[in-house]
Length: 510
Image 1 (cartoon, rainbow, N blue to C red):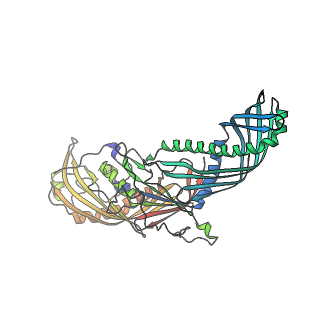
Image 2: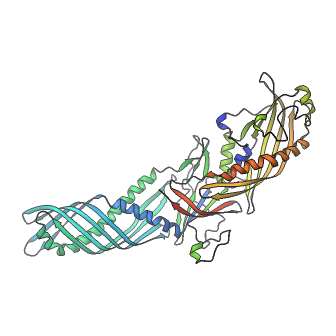
Image 3: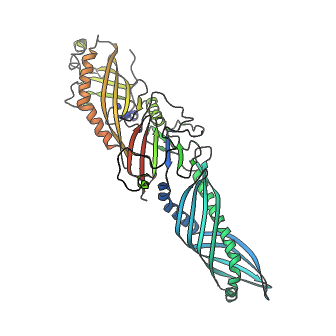
């Protein structure tokens, strides 16, 4: 009779039976594994409130990006009456202050997002060099532009390797109120000429501000190309959350499809991108979405979550496959690991009622149980609960005084479970209930095993000890792989047919 290979310590789940480990799968698995090349594991919808949440962080990033010294290379000439042609050059510029008093961030259909700023105020300084006739001069100038308007469109797509890519899809700046003051050199003269220079400088500054924005977006795109698109979950598995294809944008929301595959650390090969597919969440639905719990009756916008997240069956099917093929769903169980009051102790004397020959051959000897998943667990997501079938095999050994392990019998133990996932802040938890257990004898070296009697006792033991312990562990939850500083605020979770839907607001604490 063959036996399962002994697991190494690093492969073993700690502190709970492997049955409990399966319940950590992030969502629901169907018996049919979807093709990972075409279907997203995670689908996200960004709402207008998402943009409002991100607007202030985007403005802070924009301000920090602009408030640096920038290469300007602004040159030009002006023909002054009586004095001749004034040629000037401004090689660099430093923005000291940027106030954006009125700003909005909206979706730009089929492109990305659009930033509109009104009544902005910008204060800057620059070095200058000038030549008027045969006279050369240099100095500095301070400029204050008020009533500045900025309109910029940021294009968002996918670069073919799962990384987001951004580009400047349009930019326009308009400033009508420009004040300048020259310092050093013949500054008294240029200050007199300032009203004559303002129109030309204002037009060129408007163009240069867009160029500065373009360069900043290029730097952002370069950083995104090196962004990590996977996160380790533990020593065995990691999750790939790279883009499955270009995001889709309408005037109401952004639609993002992520791969969401869980893979074994060190063995994953990046799969090719594919266009995202439509989930059964009806993307044409008007946001806000009707949530599963009744809410108060403020204006409809108050119902709209910042983020809608659908976690599809691919996430859990890839998790089940990864942990199963890695050998993580196996465990050695000794008598010392069972609760003292557990109705079935791992000794031949305790097992005599199920296998009389076992006690006859090995009187009152300790036993050991090797438990492993013989095939990938199957779960399906329904509106009422997560329904699952777990397929395991258990081989019993007698531990002789010289530490030799003698095979006794091999059983198949299949269980039906239902679970209810829960979410609190950044942790995913849940509860589980055992709904069925079936034990069959596969082989035996000690005669027939009374599997029906054993099955009844196992059900009682799991109901009394196993399930409460699993629920205690599950209720503590596991942390979700979120970016540093980002938290889910008032998340609401609902089960749908084939996927789990999370509607949540967001909170950022650096």
